[in-house]
Image (cartoon, rainbow, N blue to C red; front, top):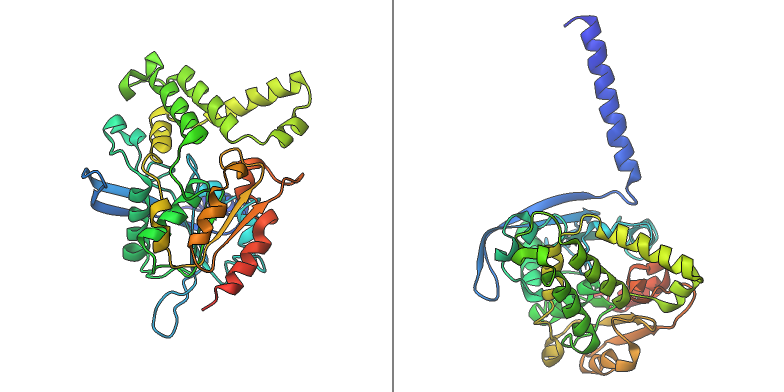
Amino acid sequence: MNFKNRFFQLILIALILINASNIYAQKVVPYEEGDYIIKNFKFGDGLHLDSLRLHYYYIGTPHKNSKGQVDNFVLITHGTGGSGMSLLTENFAGQLFRKGQPLDASKYFIVLPDGIGHGKSSKPSDGLRMKFPAYTYDDMVDALYLLVTKHLGVNHARLITGTSMGGMQSWVWGERYPDFMDALMPLASAPVEIAGRNRMMRKMMIDAIKDDPNWDNGNYTTEPAYGLKNALNILAILGSAPLQWQKEAPTREAAELYLDKYLVNAAKGKDANDMLYQFESSRKYNPAPNLNKIKAPVLAINSADDQVNPPELKIVDTAILKIPKSKFILLPITSATRGHGTHSLPAIWGNYLVDFLKSTEQ
């Protein structure tokens, strides 16, 4: 190899290393990611997928006790339409996983998976479209249980928590696998069948997509833009924070600009079939009859300005009484809360998590 070719090779390697360094530097916290393929996964309705892919992100290192068991595992699941990556933000990961923070990654092994139908995990838009199995929260939790136990080799969790849909799945974890965790912390959720306004608005979103002529029973070649826009508008109302919206858009012009920007950003990367499945997956969710099966202490946290889980329904207040060593915290409306989105702001509720971890130490 002559000198000139060797020189250009070294330049190329340097550029690759610089680029990799920049990508790494952009991470809020250092993380890795992986995939687990479950062969012949059986859904609750009896349907199968020959190959179900679960993608996940992980931070920290597993620690094993004297019995060779991992004792520092934390599972955090995301909300509807989100992904593990959606929690790797400055507001969430940047307030939880750094040294000295509530879930310090030097002490905990933290996994943030993409649920079925979300992120880089198997979903309708991969090719099956409306032939994809109609998964439920139970299916999502059962698949994650296989990821954690069979793939990661973890047979016990120090903490299981999650935001919104992830919060609801925390309740499901407690019922389906009651001996698996030391503690449960559902955020922005309620352990009851999704009914009332919540279900009505979800159905509005689903119907908006299906009623678009371009949806074509899920066989569209371009996104059914009108139906998707209407679904996103309804989603905006469902997750709205009136106090903050008034502050951020105090005039007619500002409000309309705010909405226009929201729709542009919300539509990026959205697939109508995926969204339809995501919101329909809650249809069988109802932990209420089996709350007595939960053995782990529960710390449920909601915010008073959450339009998805309105405090006047008093659902969690009553439900939490059925679970020993458990507590419900309703965060008051402040200039810092963001309605339903308060679930992703540990700067507001992180101190409660610290106390909860101390109180549940084995």
